[in-house]
Length: 264
Ligand code: 0O2
Ligand code: 0O2
Image 1: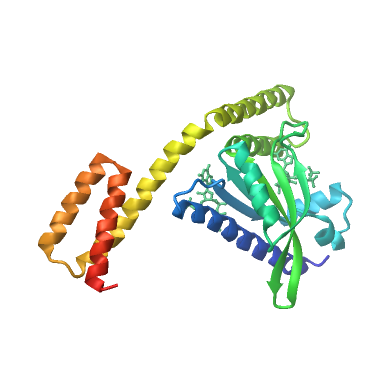
Image 2: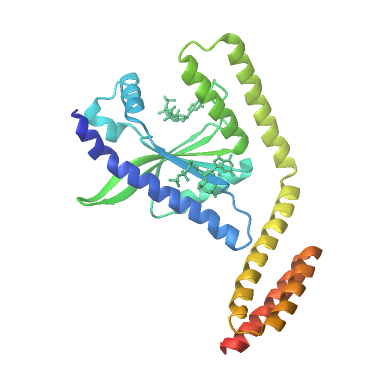
């Protein structure tokens, strides 16, 4: 294949990765803005490097003019979750969407790989709008917990370093580490409810504080300095107290004031 052909081939994959990242990050933001727990912690994505595509094509005997139909992970999205349970929530969300089509699922959580690798893989077909019209491209979505990601990231770099010759003692350590990561996920599942409650309290507080700041700014445009000073003082004392209900009540009062001022 000609070299400059690669650029043309990879363009829709780059587009797919960018769009999918925005969609999954947007999903997280939606939960956060509603003061709800987000099953998505963070999202990354990449287009496979040409050198990796060539290597994989060789390993799997894929003719280079068939990589688009046969290689499913040229576009790769990775979704990190706090808890194993969240992975299945994300899976349901992906299955129910109408802007991507699930073509295959690989459960390396219940069927972990011999290396110790755990993750949930979903292969999708994703429609990209190109100048030549719609193009359906494969994308691989890897869904994993933070612990799974920690392990996989380190294992991946070691495997890259040693290629086929991973020393036995390192392989053993990696197996132990995989077991430890698995235990960590199990432990976390046990205290999930507790963790959720405290995180949500924190999120609710930071959201109401952001709302209050916005409202104070709006009021500052029309109100007398003296009245604003009272408002600032009230805010600081409530903030120090740290009671989310009281902060919410205070925010409601600010909203009433704004409605009066702007006659909404
Ligand atoms: P924030 O809120 O600024 O952290 P882009 O620049 O958007 O094209 P991308 O994919 O966002 O590229 O960048 P990258 O380097 O792949 O990282 C993806 C996001 O994951 C980044 O956030 C990182 O901060 C975040 N991230 C990476 N590792 C961790 C981690 O261990 N924990 C958490 N919570 N986040 C991590 P953003 O999107 O730049 O936003
Ligand atoms: P990259 O670009 O380096 O991430 P395979 O035959 O295993 O190569 P297959 O069967 O097409 O690939 O797909 P699979 O195994 O479902 O998913 C392949 C991807 O999953 C890999 O991409 C890794 O990102 C991840 N993965 C699979 N097994 C392991 C493992 O043992 N350790 C780590 N760290 N990651 C794994 P690539 O091909 O490595 O590409």
